Length: 255
Image 1 (spheres, helix red, strand yellow):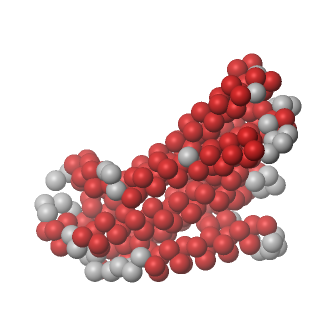
Image 2 (cartoon, helix red, strand yellow; image 1 turned 180 degrees about the vertical axis):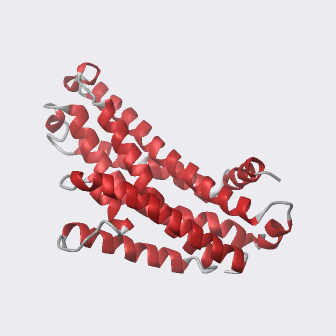
Image 3 (spheres, helix red, strand yellow; image 1 turned 60 degrees about the horizontal axis):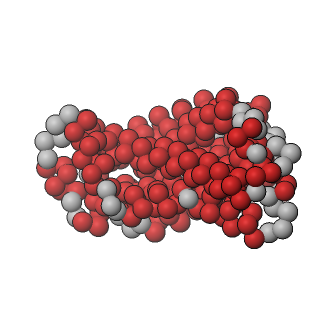
């Protein structure tokens, strides 16, 4: 059984599951919160007038990249692993004509597909929210205002690459522990420590602490470190995938 077929089977497993619904509805959270604030708070829309696209996306993407995306990855990794643990299907998986490498890689690719979809859906929902605001308040005049597409695509690309490091760690932990509470708790603690290291303890080196990466990508003041973060994220991802596969092969889903 080749990798493409194994990957397709992983996609089918997540169809109409909590992982799928978390991806779709979780991606709409930022847009709904922005619309709620804009429509219920006086002068919230007016503050967008000077440069609506830049201000709107800066506020929304800082929250999405720095806060919501890490939480989503911690949750989604656990949910995907629990599909096998909850249904006691690991023996069936390893008994099928597919290699352990194919199983491991296909599960990781499925995770990355969901993360990519989550980021893409966030942007789509944000555009829909912006057009709704424009229809309510035509003074925004979004169709005649400049949107820096290059900056937006660059930011999203950096976000996805840096998210690889966190997702590879959470992916390994979720496969490693049958008890879903452990990877969730560890992930939340590491994520909170990343926030503290980024904004409170600025003297501590953060370049090798992946749970700080998305904060440093989303918020200003760290632009000079972006290239280092991307390189380190790729190195850490490779390292954790190698270590994770060794542990996965050794334990074979025992949890």
